[in-house]
Amino acid sequence: MHLIETERLYLREFTVDDAASVFALNSNPLVLQYLHELPCTGTDAALTMLTERIIPQYQQYGYGRWAVIGRKDDAFMGWCGLKYRPERDETDLGYRFLPDCWGKGYAFEAATASLKWGFENHGLTRITARAHIKNLASLRVIEKCGMQYLYDEWVDACPVKTFEKKFTRVY
Image (cartoon, rainbow, N blue to C red; front, top):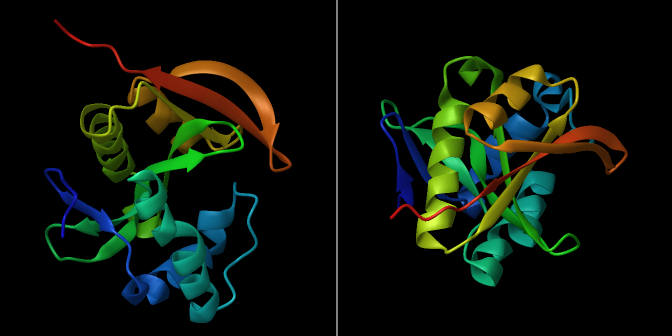
């Protein structure tokens, strides 16, 4: 089932059948360059990540990180979506794409659709986003989505820039 459809993408909930795709994404050194995570060690580790961290969020919060699929060829491209962070009492926008999908506007397309979905379909009033201070491409996506810079901080031993977008009702 496609939760969100854009011009070129489908965003849908992850399933256990996505373990190999998640492994390919989370074991790629280019993808992990600016992240604080260790590479995924195999499809079993990816399956555990899906079943223990990603999929339960759909039931707990009504949203989460979604698989991004190309409409043209039904290929897995990465993920994008919203994640509730209870330790901060906030909802975070995040995205991660395979390197062959970089520089083509997919992250912006998926991120914009995720923000819109969060505000319009889930009633969120504020969404944050963070990116490593050296990840210029990701920072450009966040800014292009209309998110406002707040401050630099350290999260999970990583220097990041923090942004937010607030819902504003248009009358």
